[in-house]
Length: 320
Ligand code: PMV
Image 1: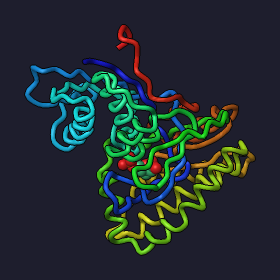
Image 2: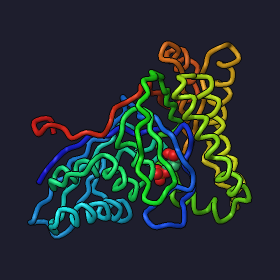
Image 3: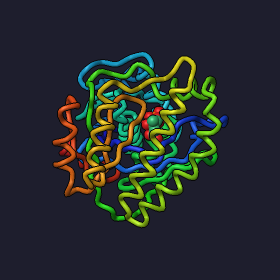
């Protein structure tokens, strides 16, 4: 009744932002992501009949309230599938900053879904597991798989891997280690309710996602970078037009965007993307990663070079 799983966060190259009006946390826009190898969440789930409720330890601290409620909701699904009512102790640790736009919910819920189903001996195929993860956090549906991964907008959507071997580097430039103040769920609802650009964003997103996907299949880095940067900036334009404005950027975010543009002017194929936080992630060729790091580091508190990572996986018992 115990298992440990590891999952990588992912960065969306075509962004999901907004939810459909159907049950189960279904995105309003299709997204395409890449798994961030080199960053990971490790989660152990132990079902125990002696427990009077679920328990969550997140990065060494006991968590309650909303984070615990989201974990319990996923565990409830697994308990229903397993046909038992045992509560679980969940211990989860990220090796990167939590809740700051570095997609910890993606790797967190993918690792939780993988570990909880393994601990309860519930056998789901990857698409079914992806649906369980999606209901907790849509980006987590993508972290079930490795490599480049697409997630659609159909009812009860599951992610699917593109299965393209396209080695790129993703330089993560973190501008703060503090947690963000507006969660993506709250930000999406606010944007939808108040941004006059929300409809335009939702209409345009499928074209950008198709372009991102085609660029990945063609293994064309400049084409991918252009489309990915457009997706991120259009999502942020929609956020900025909300009332009150949803401004996730810090001064360093803009500094980093200018540094990326300067690199491009010098002939380096480097392209930026930004999620619901101030950090900038730069897509480039692995051979250019060191040069990109040198340029970004003065404006960042930390840089991490990620490569294309693998799928969420259960660890053998002796490693957990
Ligand atoms: O699934 P969530 O709640 O972590 O939302 C993800 C939203 C973005 O990171 C901004 C975009 C994306 O597709 O990952």
